[in-house]
Length: 235
Image 1 (cartoon, rainbow, N blue to C red):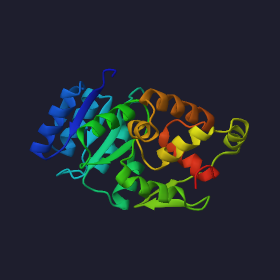
Image 2 (image 1 turned 90 degrees about the horizontal axis):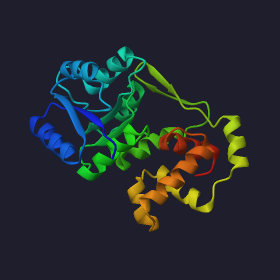
Image 3 (image 1 turned 135 degrees about the vertical axis):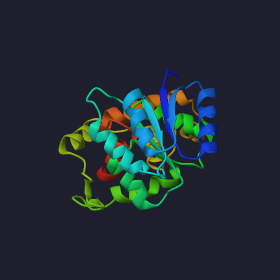
Image 4 (image 1 turned 120 degrees about the vertical axis):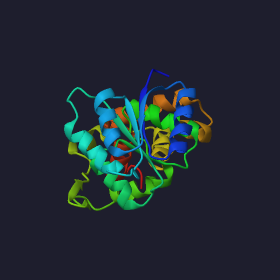
């Protein structure tokens, strides 16, 4: 695993201590922690971690507002990505987090191995979504073309597949195995889970995922899932 600098913003002392110990044991570089939103915002601006793990339920400004403020003031060269970690799995919280600028989202029921994997995927530029809430995001994706989802006073447009990507899909069709893996991606499975289900190595899955992203012209797994659903590759 490449060196990943992680910051943790969580108000519950025991939870924060447990997460810090687990992340450090997994070999991640821990750059700092904060127990509220104001301290957390200062921490992110001062340390610019690779990945910030942020709780929604902070005692002053909540995690969603923290993310929004950080993104608005983020330096152009900053590459900090946000992993939302929370007890909330309701639709409003999930969509608001992504609208504010979160890159990934998982619930606190996640086990340590999956959390480390989520941090790695987020660092690598992918949007990791907890399988427990993936259906919320995919429900929005399946709305009619041109529809949008309104979150407070923010509107997030859900676009269909652009014509050039439709042409790419036609020119470079996915193999049967790639379609099988794509369907598992849409279902919210991690690379490790896909490998276990298909009886192949994680390295093999990563190769297939890379080919899928290239063929769909997608930057990450979430975008690939969106284009797969909108193009009719996966129903």
